[in-house]
Image 1: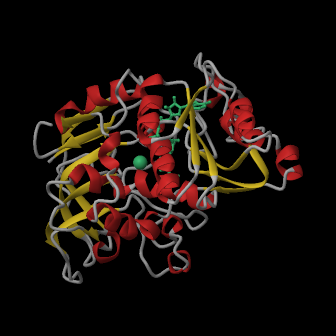
Image 2: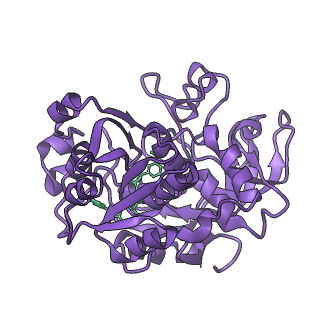
Length: 383
Ligand code: NAD
Ligand code: ZN
């Protein structure tokens, strides 16, 4: 089968690799029809993670079940959450499927995902076929309109639930005034989710005009960090009281509008612009080690250490939630919103391409070229 392989920093190659196959009685085998490139893939693509060369990328996958293991009793068209979970460990029982203990091979670690640094040996779905462990648990059955609405449903694999998780950790309630850092696909999904939860006002801060335009089209207030001071805008609009809550949707490669990286920028921005006792949800990725961090930022950052204004955060009594999103906690409900026509997360998709075009798709998306907001790859076609 064809697969998009990580061949070292900024090199993705589409190659023939052995077909994915059933390896365990609970596995299912899925023929992938849509698979997205995620901002998380870019950390790996840039060599800023522990991701090994030769592995297949891709954790936002949708496709058709073509084979099931003997212990599976399953379905037709599925969307897989990017977490791989067993459903029966201590973490899964608590709904923390993104920190599953069974699927992560290292005892001191938790959590597993398709084609992801540090999250087990599983191959990604930017390929023609994908092995899905514990298929009954990990695959989400979709409605009859799944084939026509793939671009909506594929967002259930990661970014729609992840954006929603940011708003859950930030405790966004009806009427709230919510600040989102990052107008990438995840930030846009957090803004969208805040609106679904009834936020009264949503700001989205970024320095990319094309992305801010999408946020405005959604009904959010754009803050262009190249021209405006985020805390000032938010405080001016709230009689100095600040936002009720905030979502971090950027991660450790946060940078200023000129491109200078500083992993503390967005966290400190939120600590400043969120009110006393407000909640902050951090879904932007921060890692315990960053091989490129020494050059890009400093020795501290290379070891995953981020100097933040903890004194101010403590003084303000803020709470911060962090981590990989437990996609399964939300994807069934969000699927039903899509099926009911109440949510159309496909609005983030800017490009649909064939799997063969993965190398150029990575290049453009990584460069954040104008208009390249979210890429969906179709291994079964040419875009
Ligand atoms: P992306 O790289 O496309 O978007 C990030 C956006 O942040 C860009 O538009 C960029 O211009 C903006 N940005 C950079 N520095 C900024 C700053 N200082 N202030 C404001 N905006 C800034 O990525 P994405 O796909 O939207 O993902 C965003 C983050 O979420 C990534 O770190 C990704 O790895 C992470 N993520 C986490 C989970 C999870 O489960 N926690 C899931 C998916 C993605
Ligand atoms: Zn993702």
